Image 1 (cartoon, rainbow, N blue to C red):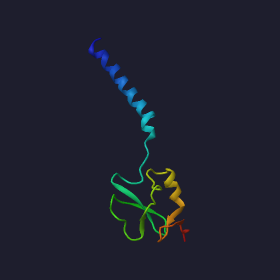
Image 2 (cartoon, rainbow, N blue to C red):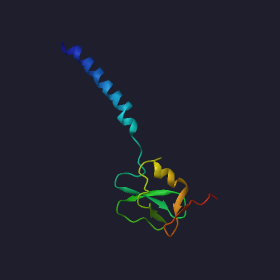
Image 3 (cartoon, one colour):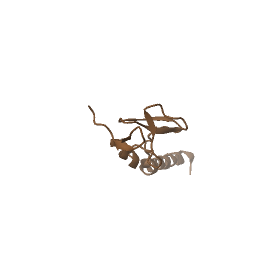
Image 4 (cartoon, helix red, strand yellow):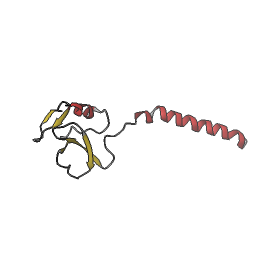
Length: 100
C-alpha cells in the first residue's frame, strides 16, 4: 500500500484508540483528597480538613483520621462518612458542630 494511503488509516486507528481509552479506563479516574506524599487531617471539634506531608504531625487543632477510616478519593466511602463528623480533643468521633 502506498505511503499516502496508510497515513489516514494510521491516524484513524490512533484516534479510535484514544477515544476507546477515554471511554473506558480514563472514565475511572477519581480526584484524590490529598496530593501524593500527603495525608488528610481533620479539624478537631470543627468542620474542615487539610493535608499534611506524610510522616509530619498535624498542627495543634488538627488530627489524623483514625486508622481504617482515611478518605483517599473525593466522594469515596470515608470522605462521605466524615462530611458530618469530626474528632474531639480525646480522639472520639463526634458530630460536627452546627454552623452559627
